Image 1 (cartoon, rainbow, N blue to C red):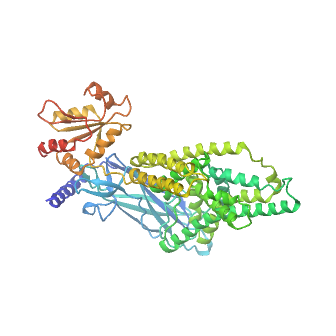
Image 2 (image 1 turned 90 degrees about the horizontal axis):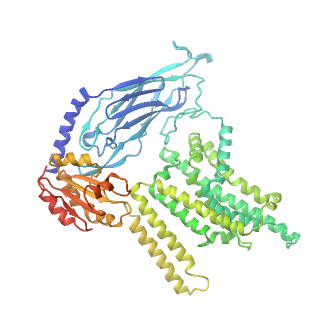
Image 3 (image 1 turned 135 degrees about the horizontal axis):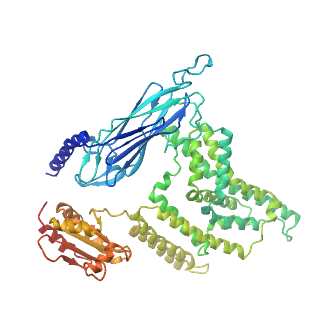
Length: 621
């Protein structure tokens, strides 16, 4: 029965789409040499060229920008879109232009009520990229291409857009027609300042150039980018370690003999070079990943993709919290001990290299703009040149440490170790906490609270691991304490970091006028008064409103579900809680049943069965 109902629903939608598209889409267009825009009732589409003009034997792209009205979307995947109504982009052009496959953004998960499934959709603002290559025009005798418009060729391009624009209650298959634009092909066109950068390169036929930046200038920019990484706040936690080691390596100490000073100097240089090698290994890993992706998968390493992963962002936040605990002196890191080791074995060098690798990793959260620009250029070049550019970024980052450890004059200028270094390290701990909070704020809203709770537990367990034991603690007691710390971390991870619960109810914001209108029309209304700081409200959410049967009944009975947020005292729901509903606090849930004078109220944290019974008594809609 469910499948038949879904099929009938979509059939009705498809039949009604043609009527809507035929008579109700007001479309206006604005045309220029490098952009065109069309607007409809619920969607605006604009086409932008990456370069104002292009040269023969080059590559460029078009960007198709979409802006949808609130609560409207395109279906993203042909596999899951009902009736095959997913978004399709079909470019066509004259013989001078060859288009590659469109580059779509990553779809968002959307719960489709008609099918009861999670589907991938595009909503709000998003962009689809259309890479293209320009043919290598033969120019006899070196003369310029002569056409009516001058020394250029104008290639007409048309972009067809197909697919249904849908909301929770209806779909519209708009006839967007063909969006037209013109691409100017000029032999000496400047292509050095693209209007946008592709998220990754599609498989394109080999051509002469992507961006016409001079190679030496671009490599110089890559080197400067590497230098700038050293001032990123995320690198600061390892700076006290580095500075401390350099201070301890001073080879002008009066207690050293001439031979001892010489050995100290050579060891200081070696340790500095090992630290630099660790940095270079990080960038070598990135260059290797870029080679593998381009050669075997036809794509590139897009810098910044890692920050689109909530798991990566949360992991970086946890790492910064742990390093802040280190800066506060809660625990010590084993690697710095090996770096500071006085033995001539290779352990100290391996430790220095590992610290260099860590310093390069820590630069990533704070260096998006620098590395994204450098990587965009590097990955658009032939593999050898792109690999060289990536490695030069690492050279730029490592060079200051190589100079500092190899030049005695500079090393003598460093202040001697003292209390200032400990205060400096502790101050950096607060900076790291600020950066960690910034990373957490970038997480999806449903993840933030759990990540913050886990961060507190992680900090406690780090303190417990290090401060509850010392060198004289019995081995059995030490193992017991640290096993308990690990168990607490694992339990907190399961409790706070497990997947966000599925939202089963389409809650609407509190609006007194909307509630009054629904009640006047005989529609049942359920109001959930809650607050972000209310722990009991979270229990109610988990025990009652996350239940599948409750969510299904609310949808089947067409109950208007209102989430009344009372987090702040001047919110409309906060005022209504006291003045309209005469309730002293949260949590409280109120169900208005048509035909009954008084609403039903629940103040406890476990009333799911009672609510279910009341919902089942409502007439089906």
